[in-house]
Amino acid sequence: MTDRSIDILLVEDDPGDVVLAREALQEGEIKCELNVAEDGDAALAYLRRQGDYADATRPDIILLDLNLPKRDGLEILAEIKEDAELRAIPVVVLTTSSYPEHVLSAYDLQASFYITKPTDLDQFIATMQQIKEFSAGVAQLPPRR
Image (cartoon, rainbow, N blue to C red; front, side, top):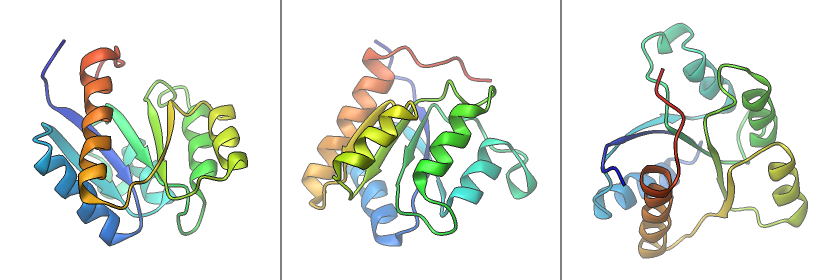
């Protein structure tokens, strides 16, 4: 088991949820670098190191909301998994939606996990800790490029 810092790309348009994620990571003492993209287009530009994101680091894991402006998270997930350079990055769908059709669609598009977003800080901390434990401890992540 490794205790290295992980690079996380959070694709989230709700500033309150971004703050909650940051707090959960800090409170849970999770060693990570958290980068945020506020919509799917920004996420793809970040991942492809385009424009303002030319120096972006490749994330170890992507936390993807489904309810995004411009294009929804399922469209972004499909693009990530169709891209030979990006498809190996684990994508955790972290969203408020618990609709069975969203869950099925996400897994059909090769999401690593589908997690319904907790609204309570303590639950959010526990969720982020579990994601970190799995991604940096149990799972073998793709090598950084």
